[in-house]
Image 1 (spheres, rainbow, N blue to C red):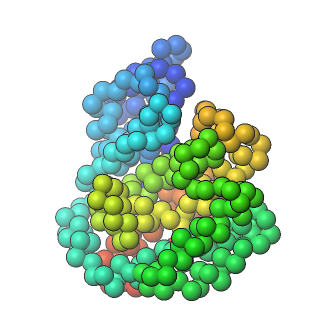
Image 2 (cartoon, one colour):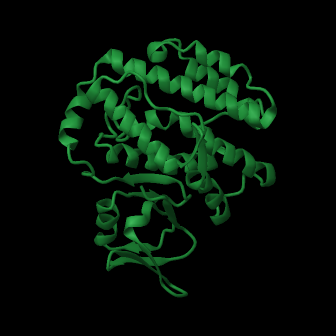
Image 3 (cartoon, rainbow, N blue to C red):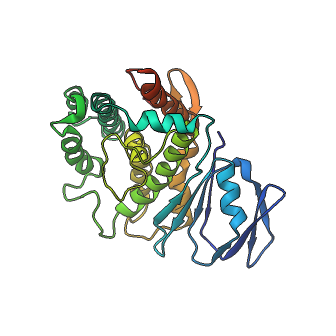
Length: 296
């Protein structure tokens, strides 16, 4: 899979396609080109960006995602390719028929991996995991005790050293940075799921009828701490109330492009997510019991 995340946010520009290349023509300065085949995610943030239809179709045909942002530079829409796998229809059917016990078992594994990842990040940054590692071991099938939520309430105040911090608040704080980073991560996860022939709308746990990417929201959970680390590092040097700018967004995208040590091998996040998606497909198709969720 390709690994480039391109954010058009700093100046007005016209985007079109020429010879399988995305052509970016800024109002001032020389044009820039990049192969469509190398684009994983195209983020449109500037309000004065004009695109031809061939840009959207070209990115999709090459397996990429397009994310559209609002006036605050926060993502509000996402477009994904419809066909990226030769047996997609069969996989959609098996996915839709997945049994409740299977979905609950997969969600248990995801929640455990998420809480463990949160604990590792706390230990890395603050020297203690806040008891999250022990909490992860208590997660049962389907997480009926809602330990994911309990861990979250403990995690966020410890991460930022602020007992008043609340995730999801609309106040002028690091929530905006988290939202932006999560949106890029979500697009990458959804792209990996489509590449594995899975439909991102058939969720395991997320059930919001208005959410078109419920499975992506499920699968991305263990990888959120990658964004959390970047936001933590950023706010150590910058005022979290400052609006998202080019430098902040470049910093937040950086974790998506890093290489991570997974089971003794250096792998890109794209590679890891592709392996996770392929493992999930095997759980639906071949009754595989364990989802591949490596420590990173």
